Image (cartoon, rainbow, N blue to C red; front, side):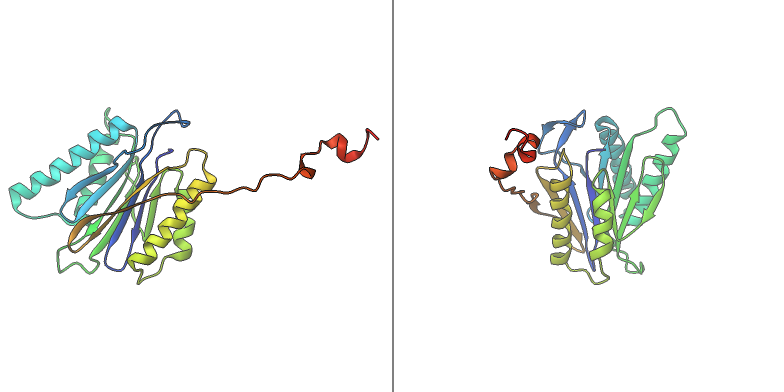
Length: 226
């Protein structure tokens, strides 16, 4: 998938990033302000990438059910509970005639003091497989994001270091991908809730113009005209 979604777990926060492009046929950009983040609770959110109809329908279905649970029971589900409910619904739909082609990232900050790991990040694919990791990604960006995350992630990762890591990933996307993201939306989730950070943009590539010597034809370089 051309869409890119990325999650990074820090010391006391989760960083969620997504490209803002809507691409058709893999070569045409239709929009540059697409929002792929869906709020599940005050301290949990989900990024979704895939078929546009499946993404919206499944994400809204999961989000509304989580909100309904909170209204009935008066309890806000932790990111772990939200991720497991989401995985269960994806696996259930896979075994029916209404499967969804969507890859997801669920991340957030648990307000339950009994949780040993307050900062939680999960990756869920369209087959219902779920894994918890420090750096997760879906789409073409995962070819760069996972390797860069493995190189730069550390246990006490700060917000500034996470943003610097994300900028490296965005720069690689702009350099290596033909249909690269023109803009990346960034959000952070901590004990105070979900916050919107400044957009990120890939670094511009500057290429020196060729010299006259480099414009010679093969025949010129072989001196067959002399």
